[in-house]
Length: 101
Image (cartoon, rainbow, N blue to C red; front, side):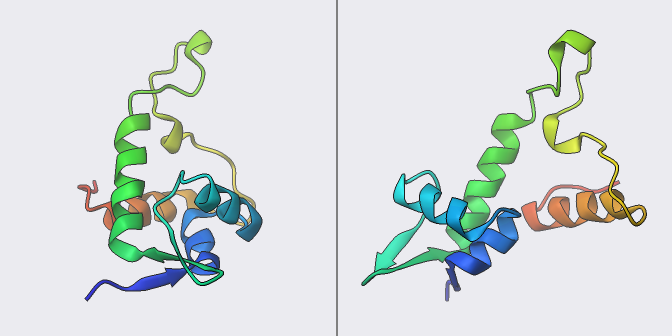
């Protein structure tokens, strides 16, 4: 059985706010459907969407003028409070079913 998510749950998984998620759903940029007036998202469809975004953007660099070939989603940003980036990277790869180091 395919789990159905609310837009709030979807927003949390995508790391964006609820309003932006609603706009993406209405514009058909994320795989969502309406039940009455409420938006819903199938977990499997969202996972497929995230994998497609990951694969589509893997060849894009952060800033090609600086000579970086590193994909945008691996940009090492400083996160206050510790080394959270490494655990988030592993978590994303695990969710997307990619190999981790």
